[in-house]
Length: 290
Image (cartoon, rainbow, N blue to C red; front, side, top):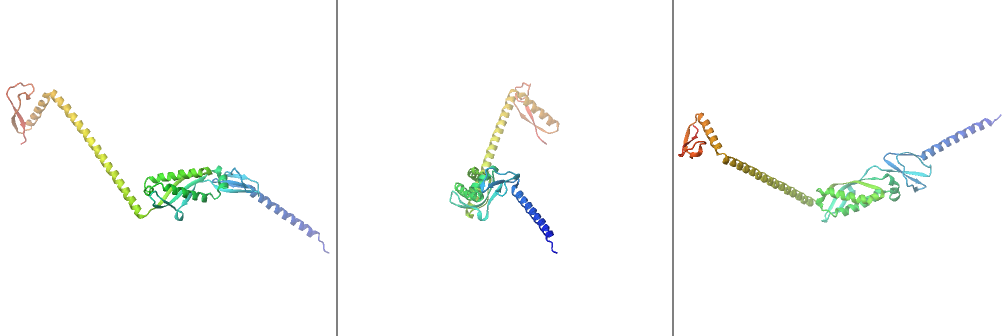
């Protein structure tokens, strides 16, 4: 005899299990849609029904309205926009010479202004690149080609950084550094610039030599003045005390004679000997070597 009741009971349990599994999946889906984790290097731009909210989500765990909320992550760490290879910069100098060079622009997005950057610019790097190229061409046109090879390159980089910062800061993008690299000029222009730099270095070297000689002349002048002053003082001293030099000479003569050397006699004034008053000219004994 056929009894259907046990099959009906088994079928009911299967439906309950299926409903429980479906409910659990729905719960997981709701949780995954309502929990958002933001990394330390980014902020979250919140969109509800496609409308961008003013306040961003900062790093950490956040709960949002599921299904109707979308969170767009934007990096806020310092990034580098490379303009190299086919994207290198081409500009004309004040002399009308074409120059080619690579460039790196370092920048970062202000976290609090990330929603504004997203809503007004969205693909902001593409927007930035077009304006960067325009500003660089305008600035390079104010300088000579040789300025890119000399210390004026730092002035050019600072000028570009200032101009770009003025352009992008109101949008919430800060320019932190501008670097010019791999400058390419016509070979004849490079040779002319190199020759000019070498001539300038030679002129500076000669200026240094002239300055050195001028200082040496001043030193010798001061030294001569010192010697002259010393001689004047010694002369004044001898004029005030003539007996000293006479005594000193006789002392040297006596020491020389005691050593066994021969001497010769020459006439001297009568007042040469201190303390002796003679009217005739007594002999002066001068030493001579054997």
